[in-house]
Amino acid sequence: MNDKQMQSNYIKIVGKIYSNLEFSHEVFGEKFYEFFIEVPRLSETKDILPVIISERIIHDINMDIGNYIVLEGQFRSYNRYENSTNKLLLRIFVRDIYVPDENELEEMKRHPNEVFLNGYLCKETKFRTTPFGREITDMLIAVNRSYNKSDYIPCIAWGRNARYCEKLEVGDHIKIWGRIQSRKYQKKTENDTYETKTAYEVSVTKMEHIKSDNNRKKNEAESES
Image (tube, rainbow, N blue to C red; front, side, top):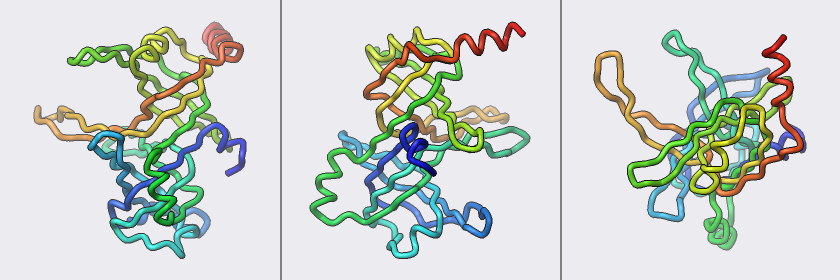
């Protein structure tokens, strides 16, 4: 991972280890593991977020449940084939991990969940209003990665940002600052029952629309050809 990639997709998380390591996959002899981290919000609630990490950077870290750690890396998407369908999985991909001392930890708890994305809108936005009257716009942002890959990150904007994002078009270039949040929802099954699922998305706190750079014309030309 190079600096240019980190400049377009960067995350820093401070929280407690919530689950044990579970083997995920192996690439060229390098083993990767998954676990969950518990990250506090400013309110009393917490986000339980999925993490993927290489064995090569945790050899000297105590990964017991309940221990505080700091993670730096990227928010990535993966496709997994399940039940005859492709499923989009979101994971925090760790580049660096360390254990903070007590003074660092108290300071870091003030901003325990920070994300920056620099990408392009790849799906039409969806504006909605909650039962409590809050305005929300759902977006899907494509962030370029090496080897001609992209990460597809769901994002959610609120209030005046929601009203502004509603008018954005596919191909628009935007920069987003925010935090990753986990959200429970009910999904109807084939047996007409409901099961609880967890969605992960970036809650936008600040955004910038790069009007001088977009992929609109490129998309229009491809559709006409």
